[in-house]
Amino acid sequence: MLQIAFYFALLSLVSVGGIPSVMPEMQRQVVDVQAWMSAAEFTQLFAIAQAAPGPNVLVTALIGWKVAGPAGGLVALAAFCGPAAALSYSVGGFWDRMRDAPWRKTFQRALIPISVGFIVSGGFVLATPHGIDWKNALIAGASAAAIFLTRYNPLWMLAGGGVLGYLLF
Amino acid sequence: MEPTPPKSLWELYRGFLSIGARSFGGVLPLAHRVMVEDRCWVAPGDFAEVLALCQFLPGPNVGNVSVVLGRRWFGPLGSLAAFAGLMALPLVWVFGLALLYADFAANPAVRAVVTGVGIAGGGLFIGTALKLAKPLARKPAGIAIAAACFGVIALGRVSLFAVLPVAVLLGWLAARKDLL
Image 1 (cartoon, rainbow over the protein chains, first blue to last red):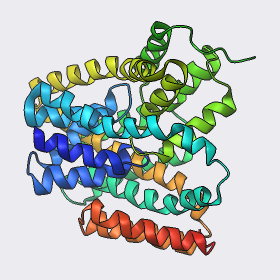
Image 2: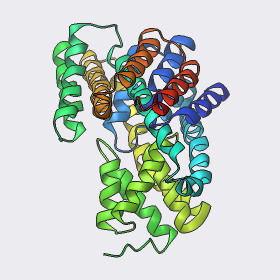
Image 3: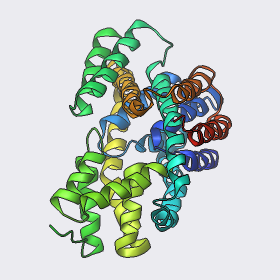
Image 4: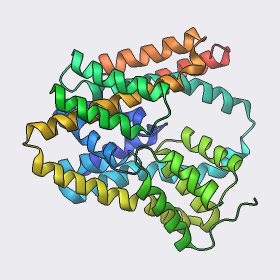
């Protein structure tokens, strides 16, 4: 539990853009390095967090729970949110004063391609729990196209994925 | 209409509780509706600025919004109340679902549906990233950095902690030379 708390606290500090940016790293650590669960189980936990209301950081609570029981869930969530929250708490005012500073705009532009690369990676590792095949390419491709092209609530796309999963797997 | 901040910690907590409880499929739209439109706690432009800051900071975006606005109105206790309100009901939901799933995980049909939902969720990430990438359409350097990040992280399985410093340095240099 200490291990997971420490690791999530570290991840917290680099999670610019929230959970999606650190999803590939979290999956790598939990599945490949620590072998706490399989890639399929990781994708299923993520599905549960997506199907509940609230911020998708809740997936950290599910991972913690799976690894170390209910207390582990709360510890993991707190470890992931705590450091970032402390940072937001302390820099809020500073950032407002820097609103027009040129380095801030440069930095923001620099971060765009990086978060794009990280988030696509997160989507990729979640969508390929058993390697790449036409089934997961179809489900992921359909939901990616739907969110990109339409303004429907993402819940519909998750529901569609559930139906396709039932039919295909 | 002039925005009026919440008058008590309890009102702040209740507001965020209602955001968390109803935010199926994404917290941000609901956070905007509750705080800007329904309760008129903050002006629309003000909300956009706080959000821009919180998207830039690490951590869950709306979670950070709750911390920053809670602090503005009631100090540290406000941050705690807002954050706890946001998380309380979703946490109950997600643990309830997980317990339910544990009972049915042996059923192949249930597992197939849940796996499908997870894969579709991965697809949502990809689609959302593509939306984010729109400003990069005419910026080959940006596309190259994004593609390189994907290559090393998703395919090469290199740790994000190793990739991030290099990527930030490259991004910074490219942005300085107006390539981004």
